[in-house]
Structure formats: structure tokens, C-alpha cells
Amino acid sequence: MKKLLRIGLLVLVILIAAYSLYQFTGNKTEAVIDAHVHSYACPMQCEGEKVYARPGSCPVCNMDLVRLDLPEKDKDASADPLVEPTDSFVAGEFKTLTAQDTVLISELTLPGIVTFNPDASVNIAARVSGRIEKLYVNYKYQKVSKGQKIFDVYSPELLTEQQNYIYLISNDPGNTSLIQSAKQKLMLYGMSGGQIRALSETKRTSPRIAVFSPAAGIITSTESMNAVGAAMNTGQGTEQLSVKQGDYVSKGETVFKLLDNNKVWAVFNISQEDQHHIKTGQTIRIFSELEKNDFIETKIDFVETQLDPANKTNRLRVNLRNEKLKFPVGLRLTGMVQSSVPGLWIPQEALVDLGQKKIVFLKVEKGFKTKEISTGVKTDGFVQVIGGLTFSDSIARNAQYLTDSESFIKITEDEK
Image (cartoon, rainbow, N blue to C red; front, top):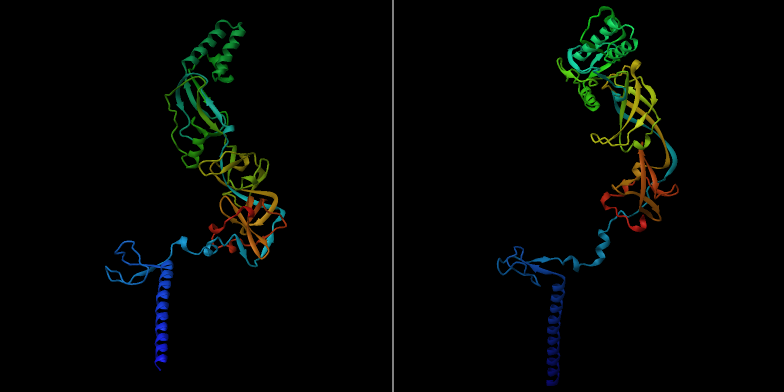
């Protein structure tokens, strides 16, 4: 009996020891694992950045410690695919299309305006030095007719030449060479043949010489053509002349400019995107705001290559004979130009424009992958493909539908 009791006590001691050992090693392992997986800190940071291996209370404020997550470097790298760009490959079945090798006909609408043709301007100059005795025009941009008197010049030089001519015909009528030379000089000073005949008959000199308009047009001062056009387009049509009565002029000095209203330019603006469709000699139909249902058809005379800094466009111009058209300067116009452009074309919605890169979604097995292409002009909702795509490649019909944000698209070297 004593032996059995002794054995029972021994077994009990062994069991107690084994249980104690299990409790000790188990708690230690759990603490080690917990220390490696999580750490705890006071939510109020009473002790700064101090952390604890086990949960509990803050010794300062007695608030429960909160668990801190592991830093990014300790996390499992298997989560990286979850944050990679999702648009470099899109799985699924979507409507597709192929690029079309064809010629597209487009019609461009260009805004324009009527301006003076500077090549058709005429200078009205003083043929003799003197003083402007009288002006017969009152303001800038006044219309004048051919042969209309513009101003009178008082010239002592002209008076001397007239007296010399009268002396020759009166005292040396046989000296035809000198008389002819004196007559020619008077004509160079602006006297007409009739005025010279009247001078020969009456023997009465006149120190005043009239200057007449050589053509019909618009009278202006001698400022640049740009200033003239700007003033006309802003409606400043009654400005005072810069030349006044009593002003002195020199021989050969340009006093006025005469702008021919029968020869004008139709100037149209072209955006940089559309300038590839325009060339010299191309047909253009011109509508005016006065006759919107009527038009004239003519040819483009010149396409400027320099960008206009004011509106960031190029310009084309058409020379117009305005005798019958009666297009006033400043009249707004609309130009219609048709162009045909051959090439490989895709709809604009099949393209994602990332600025410097143009992306389509190329059909591959089990989905679509991104493909960078080179593009040309755009017209009527289509984009010309220059490189990176063939007519046999199938691409997604709606590229925007395959991506949530263009910024997610990432092109790798093997996708180009």
C-alpha cells in the first residue's frame, strides 16, 4: 500500500512539473512572437516614442496602450503586385477594331477678315519744297477719288522756275532746247501741260502748286500698315491727320499714303493642328457676314510660316479684286477649305493621349496590353497613325473604358 502511494505521489509531481514547464515555455514563445509581430505605445505619447512588447496601460496617464503596425520594410513583399499599375495589362473581352488605310476628306472652317493690301498702296509726295498752303482732306481714312485735289504747296523754288520759263519764251524764243528744258523742269515740279500753256499765254506766275490724287482709295498718314489696319479694325475712322496747313515739306517727301480699296487681302487664321491641311493654290470658298448664303470661290495665294504671337496661329491670305465685291476693310469672313489626307486612321476614342505619349490597347491572348504609337493629324474624330501600329493589329475600340486614370498607365520597353 505504501508503495502504491509513493508511486502515485511521484506521478503527481511529474505531472505538476510538466504542466509548469509547458506554461512557462508557451507564454515565452507567445511573447517572443508578439514582440516580433506587434509593439504597443501610449496613444498620447506620454513617453515619446517608447514602445512595449505586450499590451497594458501607460504608467503616466493610465490609458490603454495601442498596437502599432510593422514598418513597410517588415511587411510581406507578396503585397507588391496589389499596388502595381493595373492598366499595363487588362484582362477581359471588349469590342475591338483595326486601323483603316484610307483617305479622309475634311472641311476646315477658318475665321478671317478683310485688310488693306500694302502692295497696292500709293505714296503721295511733294514734288517741290515749300509750305502746305491748303489741305482739301480733313481726316484719316477719308475716301478720295482719282484726280481729286489733296493739298496746295507754296514754293518759292517753283516761282523762280516759272519766272525763268517766262523769260526764255519772251526774250529767247528761238532757243528751243533751253525752253524745253525749263518746261520739263516745271512738269517735274508737278505742273500739268495745261497749266504750262496757261503760263505761256498769261505770263502770270503762281507760287502755289496743287497736288492731285493719282488713284481712288483711302487717304492716310505715313504710319506703318500695321497701325493703319489696327485703327481701321477698331473703328477709329475719323482721326486727325498728322500733317497740318502751314507745315513745311521737302522735295520728294511722302506726305500721304493712298490705300487702294479695290485691291484688298482676305486674311484667315489657321490653328497649328490644321496647318498641315493647307497649301498655296488650294481652293477656298469665302463667305462674308453681309452675305452668309452667298460665297466666292478662289485660290489661296500665300500661307505664312511664321506663328502670329497674338493668337498663336498661322495665317493664309487671298488677293481679292474688290471693284465688284465691295468688301469693306474690317469685314469679317469665313473660309471653307476641303482637304484629303491619306494614311492609317483610328477613331479618337481608341487613343489615350498622355501628352508626349499616345497609347492604344493592343489585343493579345486573354486580354489587352498597352502599346505606344506615333500619331499625325486629327480630323473629324479620327487620328492618323504614323508608326507603332499596322492595319492587321486589333485594338480596343474605347481605350478610356479600359483605364480608370491615364496616370496609371505605365509603358515598359517590351510594350513599345
